[in-house]
Image 1 (cartoon, rainbow, N blue to C red):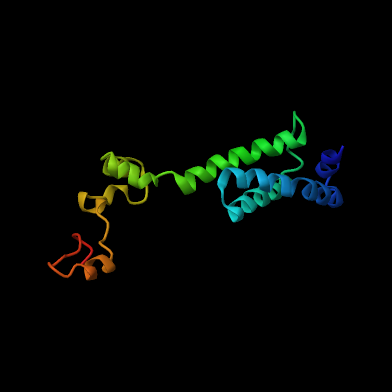
Image 2 (image 1 turned 45 degrees about the vertical axis):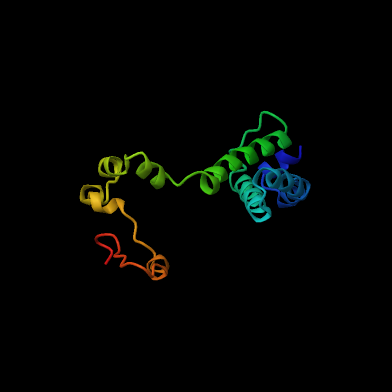
Length: 141
């Protein structure tokens, strides 16, 4: 009943739904992310998207189950963003970066070269090396 009112655009019903779900969903998201701000961000974004897409959302379970599933999906996205190795590093480690960039990057893929696999050496590292000259990687001088 409450979600039907939200679907019809009732802001008061959405406010009630928000107050009912927010802290519980934040606790679940925090349990997963171990980061209070990330958990609050995930839940706020979820509830904001529910309001924006309210007319097209069809819930075939309970509203609580729908939200918990949504938080779990958001958790997976967060895990990919925060905890997983950055895709570029994975491709570099597996020696696929040059090949994949040339093949799939429509903006600059045709210009990549072997030298582009290298990262610049941070100035802090160069300055900390007191015993020998440490030139930067080619094309970063």
